[in-house]
Amino acid sequence: MSPHTSTPVLIAGGGPAGIAVLLAASRIGELPRLLDEGLTLVEQGEHIGSGMLGRYVINSDSAAETFVDTITDNPVPELARLTHHPLVKMIRSHGRQALPLRIVAEFLDLVGEVLTGLIHAHPASRLLTGWQLRSLHQDMSGEWGCHLVSCDGQRTQHIHACKVVLAMGACQPEQRLYDEQVAGRPLLPRHAGRIMQSDTLLSPDGIDRLRAMTAGHEKPRIAIIGGASSALSVARVIMRDMADCLAPGHLTLLHKSRLKLFYRTAQEAVADGYREFSDTDICPVSQFVYRFGGLRYESRDLAMQLMGIANAPPEPLVHDVQMTGDNDAQVNNILDNADAIIACFGYRPRRVAMMDMRDHPISLAADTTDGCLTGAECAVMDEDGHPIAGLFGIGLASGFRPSGAMGGESSFRGQVNSLWLWQTAIGEKILHHLLPQDAPVLVPVTRLRAPVLEPARGHIHP
Image (cartoon, rainbow, N blue to C red; front, top):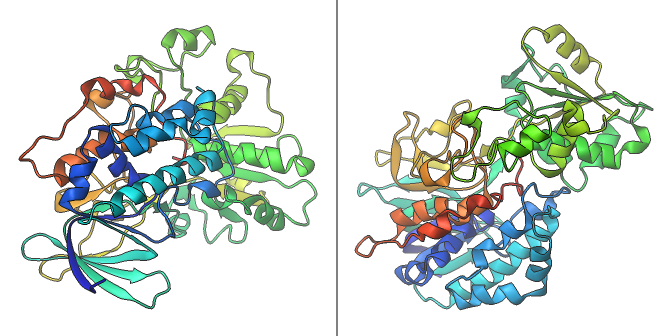
């Protein structure tokens, strides 16, 4: 391959978010046109599909059937045929049940194999595995010079792209533990040696590392900071894999906001004795209570136990404390006496160095505390909140907030990490900007109303 080449579209990342753009195109019959126009997909791994998803030792917090929805009745024959694959049949048989993330990863790798064949069948498009995007440089026309480095660090190449989609996943930077305040204090350096982030705990060797951290303590005290799905998942994994050394009340969940529960209808919530919601917490499209902000499946079950909802039996191992600002002394006492602290602060988007057409570094809104990578149209935003021409983002921690036909409760102030939405409405938003507009991008309005199925958001940990 020539070290200097060009492409109309470059997608950086071939994990769940990166291939979601291709799947969104396939659903609306535009994948052949996208590949004929020319696309370069860059992935640091050996293949595209699941990315890092299979490393997590938990279940999804989404219905199994939503993961295979995108290939159902797909206009691309190669993808539609996957509905007959034994793995897909097994997934569909689970209906609204949750799935282990390793099975979701197997499915996405299967989809990745098909997409690989489709990319190779279109001469204008390329798949570059074993490469990483390292930097972007905007030229005077507003297009992008993309600097790539092979994963062994031995080779480089430069690609000129008219448009770039960042789908590089997310990370949990340690610096946040120095910057973010918990009960008036940063966690580091005060609690050095006793802190682990949720991404590490939920990895295959996470429990072994936690055991090593608490070695010498027969009945260790463990504090979990966070009230979203990741924090409840962490608690479940610790209870499951360290039950031999946990004492009642020694596992403490510290959270700022009250725990919110997902329900399919307000009537079901009230029947369970759950009334901590209003009309603004109900999705107008699906009528779900806390459609995006509510806990689901195993995380929801644990929260119901902590809250005493629907006569759920109490969980003696977990002590639940809401941080109100008035109980800082209590919270700091819990942290100071903990043998291990698990920080569940969510994720931040991975980014690359960017230079503008005057060779000045480009600062992003995502570089600020709680800043979002993308705006309403999925364009990457600069530090002033303005969209950057020809640069788009999708995936974990991209910061997308749904509106309009996508539904969701109006009270929701977080960001949606939904595989289903990436493969449908969010992917279609990006396609609108990627494809030449001499022919309109087809939007299947009836399919956009499909989120009566639970959005597949559980492959990550918001």
